[in-house]
Image (spheres, rainbow, N blue to C red):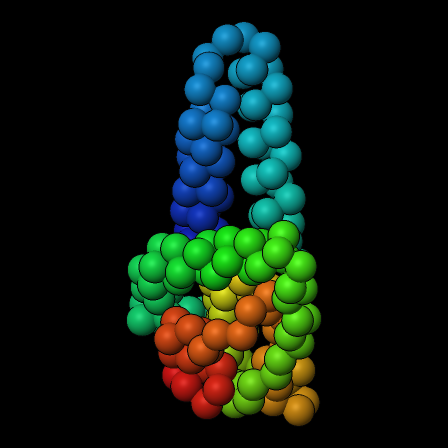
Length: 166
């Protein structure tokens, strides 16, 4: 498939996806919403098209990396309980420690797959309320994050590369 055909397919897919998301969030087909939604979708597609064509961003995840998202609901449920427990303890006068942590991160090369691993690890890990990813230091091979309460590195995050996983 030529680059032009692939790009056209991406633009069509992105346009349809953004229009569907707009309609799902608005849940309304009044003229006012459509007059605002159509230009918003077109501007978003135009920006995305420009970004894809001009910026040297390469993101190439493998299916096994993307499907790690199935672990999120369980991780979020566990973290909600942990955060609620921290809140109860805070109300009781026992302040939670601020935990800034670092674990090893071996995926330091600059390949499209390594970029995808870093992006997915940051996005997936930060979804849970107990953990906020600060960043990844590629030169030192470190994954930095903050937790309200200390917990084990999530399996999903390890599978994507943190702590020598993946």
